[in-house]
Image (cartoon, rainbow, N blue to C red):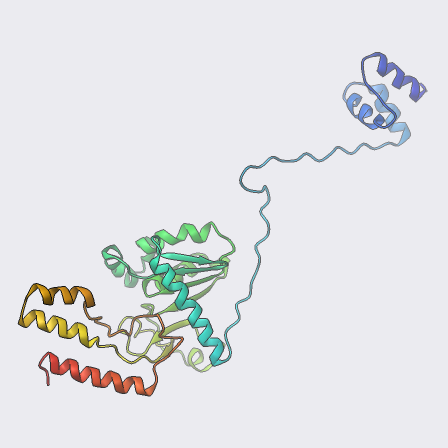
Length: 294
């Protein structure tokens, strides 16, 4: 058998550069060209492991990190529920204020409801079961798809319809859906009503015309807001249509036809007390007197 060092000297004469610390490199370089050296390696029992090659990636990693799984824990005490609703109310305001109609907070996605005439025209899609074609849903679906960390979705009104649509269309994501005043029709289920662990995370205000058919929603109470000043301004315009009176209407706005029962802000974190209903009743009587009912 040819001496190993003699083979290395032969390689040097052929132009291969060697050194005491890179014999393995030399062997690797000639592995493809010299059967003699290959036999020497095999006889010596040497194994040369190729260095793993790095895959160059730009923008994203070749293997995305695994999704961080979170487990949603329901609030237990009244204070925990109030804090839970307060956070959702605050972030939902941000969703309504954003041009896109949504707000992301970590693993949570907040979806605003109706904001313009195009959203109003999509209302008919809710009972028809085609809300996935609505402007609200088309706007937020790419956001949800492109962020695998989102596992809690909160929606108000028609935004709640988009939330439930995401849950239906992406069952593998196993999201926790939370809705407020959503237009849902569901017959009463005693198990969902009586068992706290089975209650859906859908919330509604008693008397709200939009969510009144969701008989399994967790309801809260809010005193109606008649906006007496707005009613007076409109009555003044009817009786005396002057520019001054018209400007007052523009300042106060039109009265809410749902009497504030469809609003989310402050409703759930601070439910109305009995005294609030007394004040609301007095305001309602004043409104009736203003428009000539009593």
